[in-house]
Every structure is written in structure tokens, then in C-alpha cells.
Amino acid sequence: MRPLTVIGNWKMNGSIAGNAIWIEAVCSEMEKGMPAGRRYGVCPPYPFLAQCGGLIQSCSLAPLSLGAQDVSAEQLGPFTGEVSAAMLSEFGCTYVLVGHSERRDRYNESDQLVAEKALQVLDHGMTPIICVGETADERNSGRAVEVVRGQVAKQVAILQDRLADSLIAYEPVWAIGTGKVASAQIAQDMHREIRLQLAEFDADVASHVGILYGGSVKPDNAVELFAMPDIDGGLIGGASLDPQEFLAICRA
Ligand code: PGA
Image (cartoon, rainbow, N blue to C red):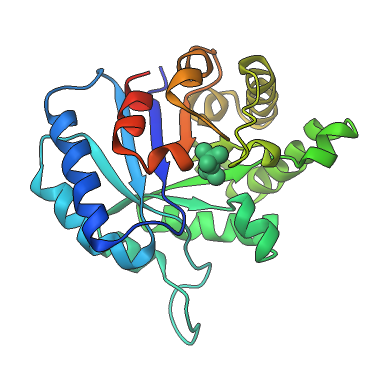
């Protein structure tokens, strides 16, 4: 049985004062009790990891984990501006996003680089959340499955059975931050496709890997999405900025 996982991705949002209010609101509600067998995480920008990690630790009963939005593919050394997996691990991160479409698109991240980042995350005992997804043009020209399969294939080739310790997030680019959520059936069909592809490699890996959906998830569409057999949770952008919306999705 794969646990349902809900991860908030704040992107380049947050402030020292605002983060404290968010963590306090979410943790105090979570401490009152959450649905069993689920995992929750939040990914603030790098400079806030220490603050948010400390605040989360001080509410030890809240089932909330810390995550980061990216990581370097390098271990250490002269890579100005980069942040290593060892550093993220020292700050108490459990999850690390790799290959978010905003990074693939704006910073030219390739499937190869994404897999190298995921390996760094795994080597440091954390869980990579490997993001994949097609653009509107790719879907409209009937190539959505081919594109996503290509992205997943590279991860399979490089990570092999270490994929069993990873999460995959299917995030159609046309649904990210647009309010255009994929219908639960469209999302389920792609999640199924990804699981079948993983099963071609190894049936055990395929049954273990959690596949999250991301792209305009809100409290009112989360229930239907999370009810799908191959959707194992969500990666939440915009709606994770509001603690009450995030909590409502966590409970969906
Ligand atoms: P969104 O973003 O929920 O704002 O669409 C999701 C994501 O980019 O992870």
C-alpha cells in the first residue's frame, strides 16, 4: 500500500514573518490529528530552510517534513550559488524536488542532469521528487505520453532500482499555476502509463513508487484526484501558500 503524500512547493515565495505564521497555523492543526497513513511536506526557498526546519521541530507531534525545491548535481567545490545534498540533509530535509518544469524550462535542465540530482539526493538519505510532464503543445499534438515516457525512461536508465526510494510527480506544464487542472481521468491515465513503464523495468519498483499529481490542485479538486488508483498524492504550488487551503488538501 502506497501512502498518500502531499507536498507544498512555495516556489520563490515566503518571508521570515510569514513563514512563522504558516508553520504555526499548519502545525497546530496537524497536532490535533490527521488522517492516518499519510505523509506531508513543505518546500520553502533555501534561505528559509533553517527557520522552517527549527519551527517544525519544535512542534514534534505534527507529521510535517521539510523539503527543498532543488539541489546541485555536484557534491561540493567551486560551484557558486549551488547548494549540495549534504547541506540539505544537514538542515533536516526529507524531500528534494528535482526537475521541476520551471527549472527544466528556464534553466535548461536536462533529463540527465535531473537524474544526477536525484542520485545526489538518494546518496544522502533523502527522497527525490522527480518532476515530469508535457507542455500544452506536446499534448495538443498528441505527444504527451511519448514525452513523459521519454523523461521517465532516462530516470529508469540512470537510477534503476533506486527509483523504489523516489517519488515521481506528474505535472502537466499547462496545468501549473494556470488554474487549468487536468481532469482526474487525464491525470490517472498518465499515472497509469508511468506505472506501466516502471513495471516494464521492475514490477516491484512500479508497485512501490508513489506518483504525485501537480498542477492547480485545490481543496475542491483534490478529493477526486486523490481517489484515483494510481494517484498517490499531490505536489501543491499556489494553494500551498495559504495554510488553510494546504490543510484542506492534506485532509482531502
Ligand atoms: P500549482 O503549481 O499548484 O500552482 O499549479 C504546482 C507546481 O508547480 O508544483
